[in-house]
Image 1 (tube, rainbow, N blue to C red):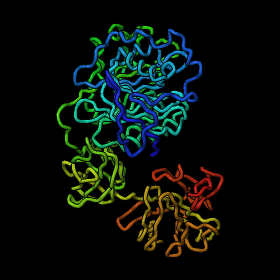
Image 2: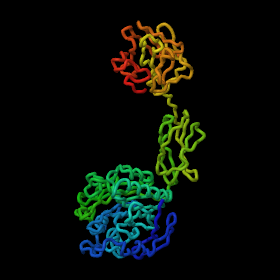
Image 3: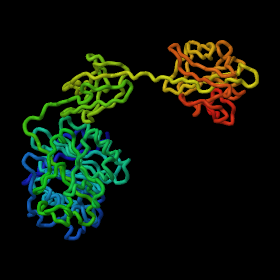
Image 4: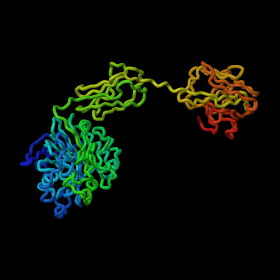
Length: 590
């Protein structure tokens, strides 16, 4: 995990600003010359472009903005979270349209991207917050950079800082610990992922996951901002699912469109929370409308626009406004924080695992940072599958052991400490899959040897099954008697062929998958005969041929070659060759 310098702890009040020294998570130090609510004046070389000092009057924060009408706040006990990269104009800065939208959405906490206002002076930044949110709001802003991230809060910001974004030089991830109503603090993280490509965004997501895992267990967490994602299935979203709830349903506008870029065809902007806060999700009320899973604020399409006063219909169409703000709401609970909890959800009794197969163990948790996962195959003794895995992941994929049982159990336990812990409600089974079996059959027979050398008669066997076949004690016979008994330990591997010749002298030079008949003769009749392959349990396969098929030097072969149930035809019907002992009809190896 890579950390950067930590910002000062900030509290901004209506009447006064107070600066306090607060310890940063995992160490760190305050930035020098920080003042309440901001990160200090920007040095000249870190400001937005020089011409930002000469913003036209109509683009500056309007002087009468302090008398903007108040938007309707969320219901008492609700927490409204907003992600907004709603700058406009030519300088990636906040102007009147973005200010009006923020004011109309009435957030409790806003994760702001491209946090530039006017000259970025102390007065300009404070004036923006007063107008867009209210004079009672606190805020923190990233260290001087081209387009810093920031967080604005109705509730006290008791600590704040930055996490290094290794993929981009002009901003970092900004976090704030916020004392929201109730016993549990909120950690808010404002991010602006890189536009370049999905690979770099996934690197950023991995950095964020590592940092979020270091936050205190039991906290509420929101990660929000401009992700620049082209789809909701990008790798970075899957990566973030290790610590945050990333599955839908997602925020939408009145037309049920959840995309947030200016063209409304890509999901650029997100508000993601951890499972503990996700459990408190409630609808966002805008006027008489309720958006069950969040609201995408596009003033161009929302009606009646008075619900978002002082926002104007034209605000989302402002010059270079490339994003729509996203709003989500949560119903906070009162009273003491709930005790930590872990619950196994699968396997929870009655399931059947196949030994050696990939299986997924799932659980739910709250107030727990990490868990161990164990398996018992006897219902009593547990073996570790993972000594520690993030509780927020909610799942672990394992390979089922090669142990057959009907009393298997899974246990998930908070670590360190050992409590809380939960075990499958009832046993489940692990079954051993039957071993793969061979499928051996007669594939080729040469009954009439070329010339008069009967040692060249042969019978070819093929194993088309999934497993090796043990031929110990198997026999090959004709209609009269047994001519070959396979020696103990003879194995025909899956997919291979084995040829039994009349005797050693008949085996072609270089043919490695051939043996001689144990009686030194197959004694196959040229006038017609029956060849039988048998195991100690009985007949496995047989073929009866006539004198018309016993042509000198021409074998009989399955058609198609290697098919256990196909009919026999003369080899010359399949190939220019007259036979192919130990090989396929086309000369290829088995």
